[in-house]
Length: 115
Length: 111
Image (cartoon, rainbow over all chains, first blue to last red; front, side, top):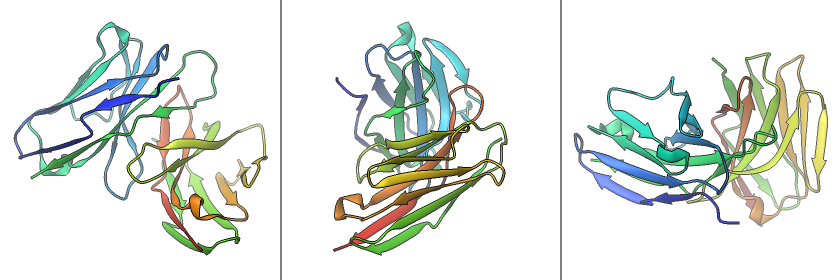
């Protein structure tokens, strides 16, 4: 079974530039999450989708971050304009709607460096 | 919202010894407590989990204990091996499927 795919793996930009990350979840997984992981910290939820609807985006800095999940499969996370404090690994995860075991399957992440 | 504290932040053990990581949480509605292992350059991977109606769960060399009254749970790794070296995260879930993670514990197993 293919895992969660993310791209790009690495991205370096200057502050005030924009960047976009892409995620393809495990086939059939209805729930998709974007987490931000700053170096030395635990992942922090940015946004959670159920199919193509937003379930929770309470911690998404909406003045600069946006995310979409068109057609309920792939998702894109965008940052515009980027700030120095956005340097982090952006993790995408997915989980199955069926069952309630809560297991999240994570991708390898996209590491962003803002200079 | 939920707050999860994890200790210690780093843990160095000799191969073959045991390692214990502890987490406390604030939301009494939390009902699911997973542990994730993250290796360098990889995403976190679930290694064991426990639900609020169970006090202890074991899977080979790893075990998790839960004390709902005190709002804390712990990960125990016995007979540690070099491949256990990684960062471990505890997490909790209350409503929906939103996980709140602790700050992580970097475990180093010395041969």
